[in-house]
Image (cartoon, rainbow, N blue to C red; front, side):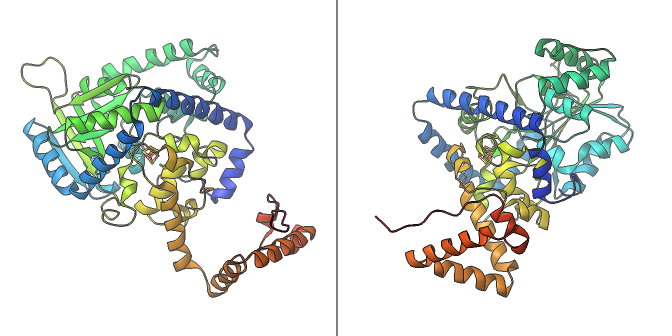
Length: 451
Ligand code: SF4
């Protein structure tokens, strides 16, 4: 993924850029607050939300434990409907397949797909001479701004209405009002023409339903329906883990997805696709392709990190994360941001940059608390950190931490280190080069006799 996103510098430096941008921080905080409150209200309408979450986690685990069987069934049944399936081992294979299928096309319309971000698809198609148009409103805003999504569900969460009005005004060549209705009307006008002219529609896949050979896509704008039914060719991209066995299982996931993602009982549009148009049907593509993307996922199966593959990409963990809420998604410099990104990125593709993200967390556990499929996110982050420490820490560092652990193992040792810490803080920061990042923002606890 590093070849797709490249903001440079380390997480601390990128976070500092976000922290210095009050407009971004306000936009992220306001939007997250709204969704967090809506999520709470939406869960109140469930009889037993905890039981539903337990069921969802169990169902996801059951699928993951027989993923090969489910993918086989999905492919066989999708092909029986007349669709085509391609299993892509990595990003390059997925890009090559899509480039071949779309060869000669003029316009491709796209609905939101994190998998397409993951493989860097737009750039490849544009280099092949195609016009690629994002049709999810948030994605379109970012395409105009030349940016990547900063949230799994709300890609332009970091943009205020005023930011959007500025962007659209530039495109329109006239000043548009800072008004949601006017701005969405402008976007609708622009995008409608693209839907009608497109040769290819590219969508993501929220869930593949293996027993039915169906692809399920949920949106709030209906744009995925246009992308999958108007152009002659439709291509659905799907991470290989995004499968459920049956429609009953799908119903469980949808009940949790809408509530967790946007605080809705159900998203506005739930679309089920069964391959290309039949001879007696008036709508639908002539060709339907399903691209199933591995790109590092299969090596997570069967490991202590497998639970991360339960993720249904609802974004709830981002909205409650105290780190994400301050810095937004671009500070992570990866396709998947927030707590799930901090876990998933290093698992999918290990790199020093991805490893750093495992430390971009306070380990407060808020992410684990809200995850609808019960991914123990902060435990997984700790596991990652432990693994890195065991592999990477030098002898001196290991000895220092072991001394520290021993000191904090007794009340007397803890008090002694706190006193030393307080003394150390009186020294100028430059005299503590190894610790000055800590001492800049922390006050050691006051210690005293136990009562
Ligand atoms: S980890 Fe859980 S909360 Fe976060 S996006 Fe995935 S399903 Fe949602």
